[in-house]
Length: 357
Image (cartoon, rainbow, N blue to C red; front, side, top):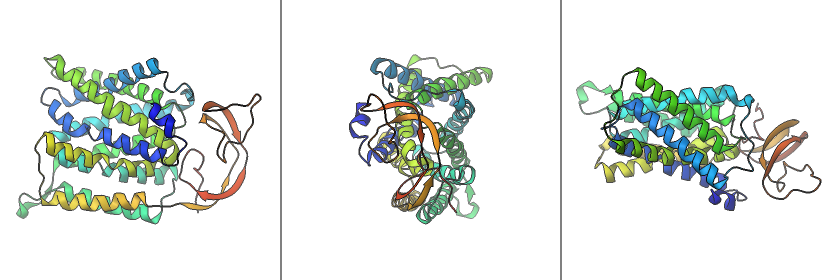
């Protein structure tokens, strides 16, 4: 994770982190599609998340990644439990859907996660959404509906069951993203470890209770574990880092690059070449993603007095408290932000979750 430490002072660091997280998650659909021939959907979910948890635990232990990050506490318990349960349900819907639709189709439908995340962020957490973001949400919703319709028989158009299951997965992930948003000030490595072991163990128990057939070979288990570490572990780690600065809705907008990576891999690995409706939906979604990325947010705003604990530097206008002796570099401790009013471009990060009229 030295990558992040080198560029975190840059204003583009959160964007780069979100895009890299998207590229890693783009591996999920096409490679999971290959492994599903040897694993049931629930066992697939279990080994993906266990791989993420084990891999991040080893990385965290060997490199001391996150030593300057604030640890999780009991306060985050409700969000942690909700995150784990949603992380079992969402991949299960996805794996079930992948058995009924192409990996390329599922990959592009992942963009609906941005819509779900944004609407939940607005409706339940009052995260601000501008005009461009609303247009983006509308365009991506239309594209997702268009992509979900089975055009093979024009006389009897119907929604694909596989596509609807993928959309259900996106809805669960949208809610889970907002749960994670409320934990993003804490150690991303710890979040991934808890998520990995919690969701993985829960899915494993469910698979056994459902009496799913256990894989005969060790290869698919190891394959799912490695894929889980890369596409879930590292991807979620970078996603949480970005979400801390960008908020839930905007991080999901950049994360929308993941589906296009998945589509490309589906064409290269699985030789899946979608039809004309896929091309139209892809063009619409690219327009929607572009609008989301171009959104600007600036106004005079009030910071009410705030006490919290997270990793921070003292080179911005929000962390001007003093240490004796002085502290240089990243560190964490409980600190107070005094009330102030100012104007500057901002996102709904952990310091800008104020209300809008």
